[in-house]
Length: 122
Length: 107
Image (cartoon, rainbow over all chains, first blue to last red; front, top):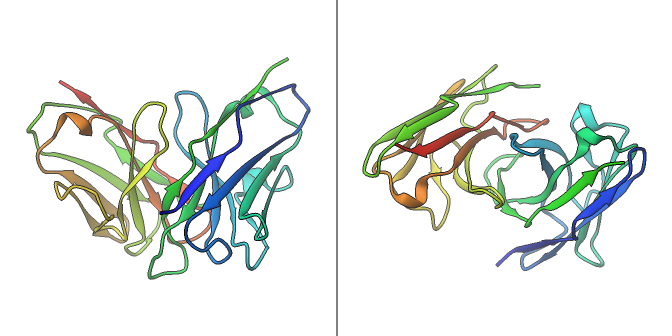
């Protein structure tokens, strides 16, 4: 049974950075893509990027390119999402989500963490 | 990026009703579409992938269809547990994109 456990809620000042972790258990860590999806209060889901640990090269949504860094470490089965230059609009719940097995290159998100609320406020 | 558009944004229905939610892609995505259910304060849950494949453990009253640019999610007989928000997502290519969501409310 795959489980993803994320780090706790954060309160940050505008202009600062945040790093959210996602520890996986069950299943194989290194060969599945770990994605980050965020949801602003009362809003929809927004894909930020993802990484397959065994390859190590992340893919990002253009909107987050240059401001977000996604990493993953097989030694600890943990993925991370770091966002810099935070602004109030980044206040959201951040989810990590692992792809499920599928028959194509890009797979749906079958396993989700519990979410981490990041609040950006002065 | 591929844009995903869901309709309706809100749907009011009663227990036992058959409901359908539509998702349209701005360009063809083959059959690479997923549907998720989200309840307040919870993470999304995968219901359907590859347009029509039912995720393990999901009730058979949920079904999906479509290909190319037009897709539907159907709930054959609404149950109290089904009142939630539903999102479609294309998994055809990066960047993955979601529809804006359909909130299913009790009439």
